[in-house]
Picture 1 (spheres, helix red, strand yellow):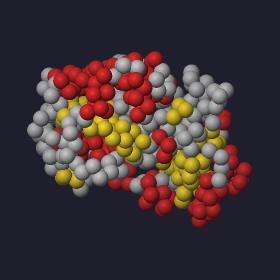
Picture 2 (cartoon, protein in one colour):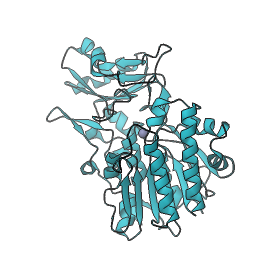
Picture 3 (cartoon, rainbow, N blue to C red):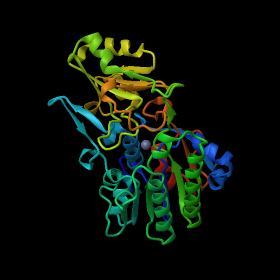
Length: 385
Ligand SMILES: [Zn+2]
């Protein structure tokens, strides 16, 4: 089966890819050290374990779509939650399957008669990732749609438990399970609540293994602390900065993390897309942005699209990433931080790109081959045996 230019072997035994949202390796490492994750410990110790890079920006939707399509945002088109329509000046939300430019591996196998299961925490992700999956032969569900509280660890725990049940009942041949990063936004690695969560994750993964599945576990992005010692987010409010430099209405900062329904990160992430009224000036403005404290790098669109594999028509005139300790906002008044009940933890930049990839089968891929998180289905279907 060839999907998006890559050949995938049809699963002969059940195959499951699990995306643990926001799981920087430190979460797993600390849970193992606390004795809370014996199954994950066995994977780290004796089987296949690598640290791999996610797609950029290191956000949930671009990476989940990259994983299920096996290609970066330049090919599948989902570069964040929002892009600016230059013709209308409107910020367009792209969490709908209509914005997908590539078929998923799941949809392709479903069409070929393989029983495909998609289990997500959030329902918006189920609609995006389950697009094209035949529900008469397979399963496509979210725990949110089943009534589990969105702002809870249970949303993810139930998704993993459901994935284990689907394998135990031999209901699916190829499965993708994707959790939410509620726990990781709220708790740091090693926190009791985080360890309790990974203990639950661990039990479900062990159950999937016991059901006979080939398992590949990875993450969409990492997560880092973004607040100072007093609990205030370390943020570059880029729209304010640009208004001062260029004057009002000369630029528009679009934050691809912005989500109309979820405000537990206050829409503060580590990536910003800058649109300019005069795009010719992008080189010079990018250089100035790159010089700001808290900015890791700022590059004009063409360079960013090549370097970070982004779709040009859904990318700003400048792409900026924050450093590991910082986030980028627009203006303070546009970020409601009252809903945050813990110091800000967030993601989106290069500093949150490194994630674990674990498998319960020995890898047959050459050790020299560098892997991305969106090679998960390649590893699961072709690279382990
Ligand atoms: Zn995520």
